[in-house]
Length: 351
Length: 172
Image (tube, rainbow over all chains, first blue to last red; front, side, top):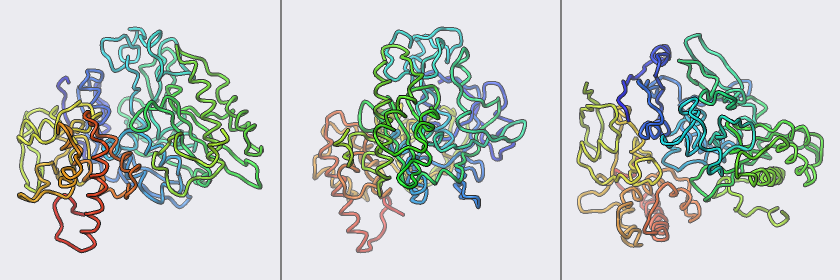
């Protein structure tokens, strides 16, 4: 780790002023940042510690039915909050399917959104990586691509965004509140992460000095509570990043799908909202034919970025499974293995 | 430039100089305070050997900057027993052969203490295994570890119902 200057911010204005300096990075729990700094992947000249900023850890339900999640809310506190898990079960399931209990106890909501790709060529400083070092090339292309993209990738970068949390959040139209030198602004989480294009080093739309102050779930998000799941295929059943994941939410009326929400993880450099699939589902009966049509629509633009064509079919099947489980109803209690496709489910025998 | 922080470590409040902001909680405990129970396994948050409780919650000490934890309460394996009286989780690990080489054990035990405080797993072995997945054991003592956690949890719940004096490791 290279030496850095450490500053502890006591108010938001001070944090933003200190964080706008070239080479500055914000520090919350640091579970991802510190790891990258140890490996020489991140080399901030200054860390601005925002953990003491007042009020930033609060989770508040607002009068209009929306929920504001403070940037510093811990992943585990959020997931284990019974009211939160009842209203947004797929978000709770996604949170608990990620990392380990120790990491979830430390990691924050905004930190989860800000986490970097786990592409091994990004984290290995001996490999070429356009994201870490613009213009150096991409050793992932032609390399080991099991965790790499099948949607939205470019010749410059085929990495994926590793978050589980963000997947149901984009499905539920979550917003991001941002503070910065020019004031505050709010944008859709779906518009927060950038696809790589020819500038994979620019990962989000944040400008220098800007930081996330909150994530917001709109009032409609709780309308999917009765039929929501997050499923995640990974190389071991716990404490592993998604090869492919899917968040599904359905609003059923009179035996038909009034509204569907679907997003995929592990497939692109951002949490991938599948709006085409949602359009296919609207108005149809929640049956396998509809789910297969939705899966085809969700993956219509998919293209392998290497030796990972299997992920396209895997994602299709996972979409069908997630929609089936969502249609069957959100379980009373989160499964012992959150997000696991191996856990027994009533419909599993028919798949 | 050295900065002083205040930490309450195993019940003792101490003022501790931090000569370099790069020092992690794990390095401070091991190198600065000579509390070598927490182990440096991977130093990347992947193995759990460095698990300690900070403000009552289990975290990976290797992925926390000490300077950022100014004011925190830290509990390590060294603070768990009361004199010669072992903590119920320590007793249960011995009773169930929850270790072989012992390297991961302080992290396993602190993680188990944290898990019991979180009160999410109950007495379901599958939930206990899932909640312990952040602690690797290369000797493969997992079966014993799961049994130990379940037994300790049962014993501590029983103990609590009878209203005992609160111990450090399980203070609410």
